[in-house]
Image (cartoon, rainbow, N blue to C red; front, side, top):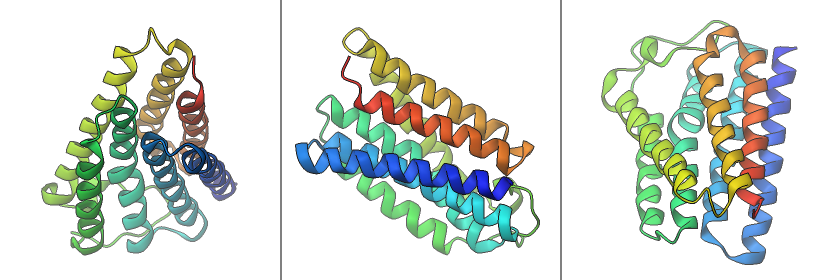
Length: 204
């Protein structure tokens, strides 16, 4: 059941990412591309969660989960918020960061092998530097960008920004409660993805 919930959350996030990508292709707005990539990373993180719940965790599923869920989602969404207010410099910065995150997720050695059926904790398998430090910097910076822009422009987009903030809050709660299991975490993933999608598309 937990694997099905995680798989469903991954499909939902991927579908919402695709809808944003379609809007980007029709409008050319760069912030939609970044938000689509952020939800796409969220979807792949949920897919890794589904794999771990269904077949047990191993090094590969953990690396995918950490890369897409731990390293990429928040920075890409934060870059989308900055691009949405015309901060074009966010694009090359997040591209460089994405390349760095990909290289570290693939190449960094694990301190202990990953196994079992519960969601692995990063501190049990990764040294603080560079992987966990990069995740902290990326998540803090991306979250500050997304939340800061939403708060600064909330009078112009009250509903949309409120939905974005709610999505970030739900995602944070889900990450904090990951120890409850894949099923519970997947529910938070699905709700957060829906809120972030709605927040990024509502104009008011």
